[in-house]
Image 1 (tube, rainbow, N blue to C red):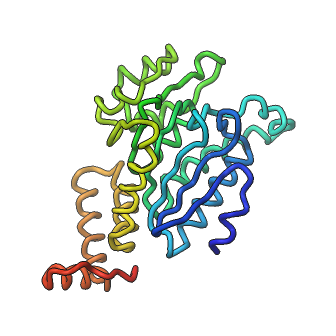
Image 2 (image 1 turned 45 degrees about the vertical axis):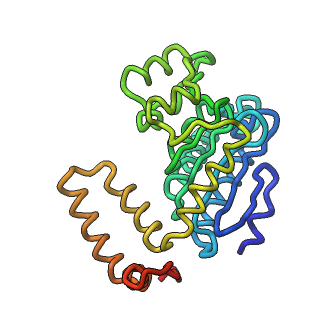
Length: 262
């Protein structure tokens, strides 16, 4: 199953220490082409079912994370009735593939993440930025919309509308000041910072991190009462697993736990 992750043309995949690093590689600016869209969706869906992978780092090749939708290739994908609907559906599912991936996704924002790129970032679990990173919604400059609903997960009311209505970009240092990213580091330290977080996640119980992410996704739009009740139910379910028993025994015996993902 790991072999299928090496068959992509616009997505580079590297696996080490139970962490899969996915690098968007669609020169020159990693625009979200149909190929990249489909390959990223397929890779994340496959990773959800590969036990040896416990966390993901998502980043971009070159100086840009993702410059947004592939406007140049739009004409090739939208030629007849039904094509626009299919294109929109594929794009939505790419973002949901990040959010719904069973394994936590750490995004390393190496440069500009615009429009669709911002939506990818907002769909990830943990965000780390380079000093050269920026998030923006430039659609207003090309007569389009897109990404605002995803950006609402990150930005305040006023800041989001400023971005959407003026094209204002928020840089890495400001993202850190606003508490949107976990760190803003030098460009050459970005991947190491993201991998450190992902490796820490990968060392935890795969059952706990998988169910933990799923639970947080489910309760995000629930009321306080319903959300916490669901979380309590999931806690009870996790507590019955072999990994939970191993974690408790290891704590008692003052040793590192050995997780099996069961």
